[in-house]
Image (cartoon, rainbow, N blue to C red):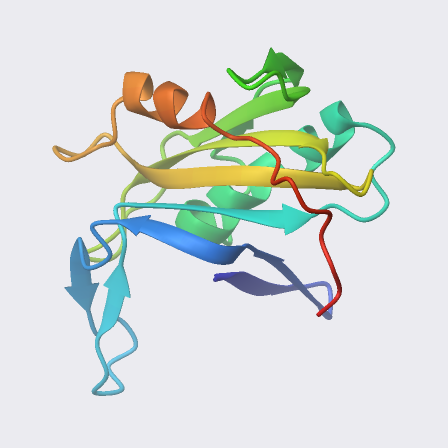
Length: 167
C-alpha cells in the first residue's frame, strides 16, 4: 500500500507492507470519474525497510513527511509540516526514533480530502537493518484517531523472535 507521484520527470513513491487499516472504507468516491470507486481509509499502519539510512533519526525524518505529501497534499509541499526526530523506546524496550508530520491549510478539492497526520518510528530490526513503522490518517475529522490511541499502538511495536528472511 502506498502513494506514487511524478516530480521533475522522475517517479517517486512511499509504501508499506502488510498494512492494517482503521475503517478501510471510511470514504468512497470515484474521483477520476472512471466508473470505479476508490476507498479511503481513516488510518493506515505498516512497516517498510529504510535502505541507506545512517541512523534511526534520519530514517524517521526522511519517511514521515512523504505520508502527508502522498496521502493528503500532493502536489502541494508547502502545507506539509514535520518535526525533528526524537528518541523513543517502546514498552518491550525497542529503541529508535520517532518523527511526526501533519498538513496545514491543504487545498480541499474532493469529497474524501482532509488534512492528514503521520507518525514514523524508526529502529533496527533483528537483522540489524533500519526499518520504520508508520501510521498515517485523516486529521480534523469527526472519526480522527485520537493521539492517545496512536501512542498506545506505537508503544506495542516490538521485534519478532526470528530474523527476517528474503523468502
